[in-house]
Length: 149
Image 1 (cartoon, rainbow, N blue to C red):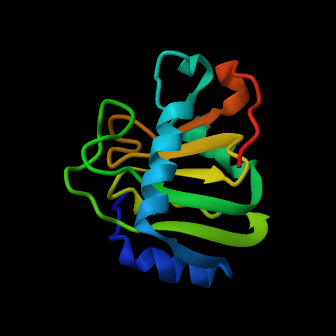
Image 2 (tube, rainbow, N blue to C red):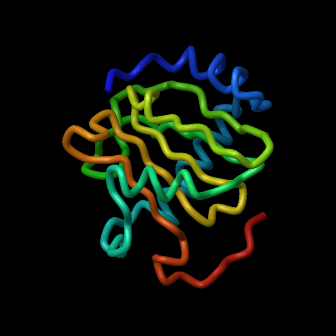
């Protein structure tokens, strides 16, 4: 599956009638760090879904607000797949709850989370070739629910 550059992502989101806004750089950094704290430790990923199973799990979810966040620098999961000096925009999206299939945008490594962070979908530049995508629920980690700001 050939991936496409990020710029068409904005057109794609608009085509699917999603309202989107670019997340400011400082918040992008905070979101990336928060994701790393919650989901970045690979040892408890015993119940993660990979490949087509991950895509299926994601397709069963609904979220009226979700975030699309590229990994920063050379930090990424799994196996540190992020690219050095990555500066792709992160997006906050609002819609009717139907989530778009973003697998064609896996040129860079990025994650998707709903605004309650109850699950995450991770796309890598090697989706369906070597590794990825990945889907994981927060409750699969065995963590107690924490109240978000």
